[in-house]
Image (cartoon, rainbow, N blue to C red; front, side, top):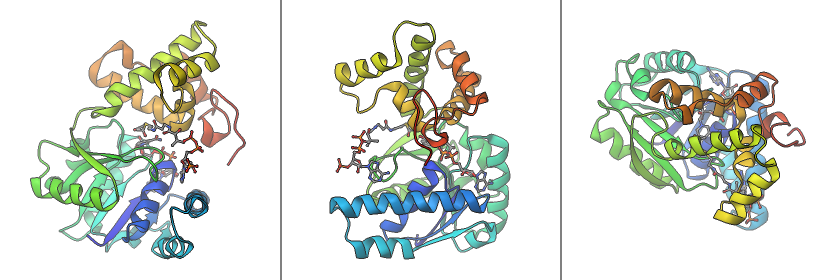
Length: 283
Ligand code: CAA
Ligand code: NAD
C-alpha cells in the first residue's frame, strides 16, 4: 500500500487525505467540483498549520505532506491507487455509482473502503467484482485528532483485506477496532440515539440548548455537549444516518426528530453551513 485515493474532500475526506499524506502515503483526493475541492484543501492547510503552531509538526513535514497531496476532479486520476477510501455524501445510490466506477478503473489488487457512518457496506460491495476487497473504514471527526478507526468486515470481506486495513490504520496513527456490517457499527449505534434524544429534549422545551450541552460537558466530562457535537458532525449527515438506522432497526430512538428534519430543510447544516443549533462564522 503506497498510493491512497480519497473520494470526497469534505469534512471527513479532507481529514483522511491529510492524515494519509502526513503518514507518508501518496494521496489523490477527488471532489465533485472545484469549489469543494478548494475548500477541503484550505481546511487541510489550516489544520496542518495548527499542528505546526503547536510544535506537533515541523514546517518541513507540513510542506512534505502538502506535496504528497494531489487534488483532482477527475476520477481517472485515482487509477494507480492501491487503496481508495470513499468519503462522499451519506447516500447509497451515490456511493454505489462511485464503487462501480472505481471497480472498473482500479487494478485488481486494489482495496476499496467506505467511510460510511451507517450504510450497509455489503450493498456497495455487491456492485463490484471484488467483494472480498471491500470493507468499511470508519474514521471520526476531526480525523487529524481522533484516534479511532472502525474496520468494518462484511460477511464476505477477506481476512487478508482486514489485516491490510489494520496495518494501514496503524500506519495512520489510529487505533483500529473490528466492527460488523450493521448500521452505526459500534460507536454510532450508541452515539446517534443519544444525539437524537438531546434534540428531542430541546425541541420539547425540557431545557435550553446551553444547559443540555453544559450538563453533558460538566456532568459527564464530554468534550462537547450533544447539540454542539451535532453542529460539528453536520445536521444533514446526522439526518441521513438517523434515517438509515431507523429504516434498519425500526427503533423509535433512532428516528430523526421533526426539528432535525426542518433544520436540514432550512439549510441549517451546523458549523459547516454557518448555522445549526448555534451560529458560526462561515468558514
Ligand atoms: N486539526 C488540527 N488540530 C485540531 C483540529 C484539526 N482539525 N481540531 C482541533 N484541533 C486541536 C486544537 O488546536 C487544540 O490543540 P491544543 O489542545 O494542543 O491547543 C485541540 O485540538 C483542542 O481543540 P480546541 O481547543 O479548539 O477545541 P476543543 O478543546 O473543543 O477540542 C475537539 C476540539 C478535539 C474536537 C474536542 O472538542 C472533541 O473531542 N470533541 C468531540 C468530538 C467527537 O465526539 N467526535 C466524534 C464525532 S462522531 C463521528 O465522527 C462519527 C460519525 O460517523 C458521525
Ligand atoms: P461533507 O458533506 O462534508 O462532504 C462530502 C463531500 O463529498 C462534499 O464535499 C461533496 O461535494 C463530495 N462529493 C459528493 N459526491 C461526490 C462524488 N461522486 N465524487 C467526489 N466527491 C463527491 O460530508 P462528511 O461529513 O465529510 O461525510 C462524508 C462521509 O463520511 C459520509 O458517508 C458520512 O456519513 C461519513 N462520516 C461523517 C462523519 C462526520 O462527523 N461528519 C464522521 C464519520 C463518517
